[in-house]
Image (cartoon, rainbow, N blue to C red; front, side, top):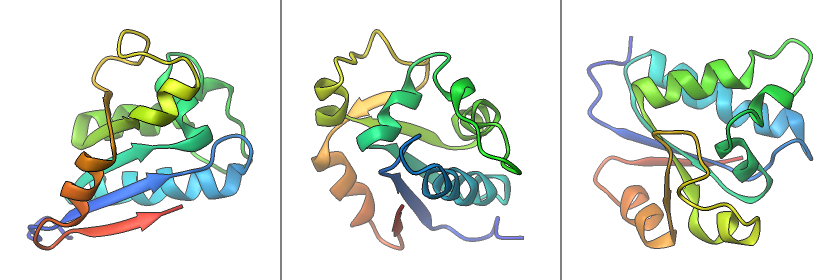
Length: 124
């Protein structure tokens, strides 16, 4: 459907279990785009940073929503996931703690991604 597009979609999740519908929207949009062949960079910031840890996404519950572990697996396979450096540090999360394949990077990398030619950024 969208596979011919050479654009980057950068989705930043700022909410976690504290705002489950907003959190789920970020995951849903990013995974739908990745499934459609769009190059997706998904950012975990704020409370969503906790989902970078093994097992934490399995604790997330929202009726009529796809399980977050499945969406994380999809995004790791078809796109990439980044946890915010400062957000991770504030929560005591280090690179050795996160799910394999999730990187930790900061604002400079986020800005580089969103300023690249043809990039589209969404913040939830």
